[in-house]
Length: 338
Image 1 (cartoon, one colour):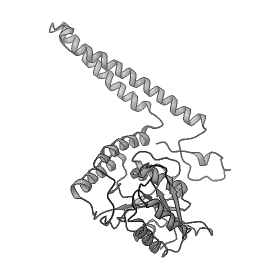
Image 2 (spheres, one colour; image 1 turned 90 degrees about the horizontal axis):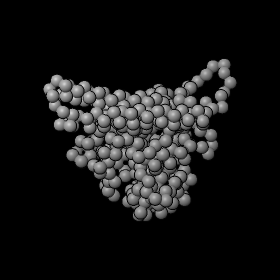
Image 3 (tube, one colour; image 1 turned 90 degrees about the vertical axis):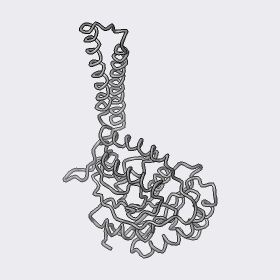
């Protein structure tokens, strides 16, 4: 395996594997056994971060037992169930490795693929995204909706991946800095990484059928993912210029109102049809009010955005490197906002 990162100092991990867990008491022990077997074959130090997402079964208890016998296994316990995105975000926050590898805790991801992800990453890529090419899930309820969602996400975001929903990925640590995840947005991390100028590729990985426990996902998740996709599109394109979004919407409504007003006048003075006999006056009033409201919302959003960046001394660009310049204290606090 090529040396894509320096060997970590004693006591520090080079690789952090982050595993969110929710009611996986039947899978936790075989998962850790497989993970240790795969990671111990690697030449670099590692840690396994288990995030207990408020499990109601014995998952937390079994995690504690396992961690007590191996200091390389770290545990984060949530007080209540917060969802997979929050669990992954906590894992990223607590991880110390230079390479961070998230994966599911249901044994459907194969720990043996971690080495392949790292080999693919090498010195060339910043993100290697797993692709469940031969996915072992229900075709109608899971595979078809996922395929449609992946096509839409790739088209809207411009980041072409076959499988956004595959948790098994490998990230360079610095790529995960500078943004927070909410909702169902963990699947969009490659999009956020592309903000940072990350070089992204994907790798076909093994996917196994679930043998214990039950899936926590249903079709209702598709709706949440689509809403999050709209949010990601807004953040990637318009976070620093929200007036473009609200102003465009305002212009659209005003245009409708103007067309309706001209048509109403035509009917009145050419065809002799009174205003009160058509809904056009209502359309005109509603459209103009909506247009003005959208424009004012855009102005407020602009003020909020500028206050955020200027009051906190933040910038919306990322500096990759400098030459013959002294370090700037706030450079590490820079954010990319689209």
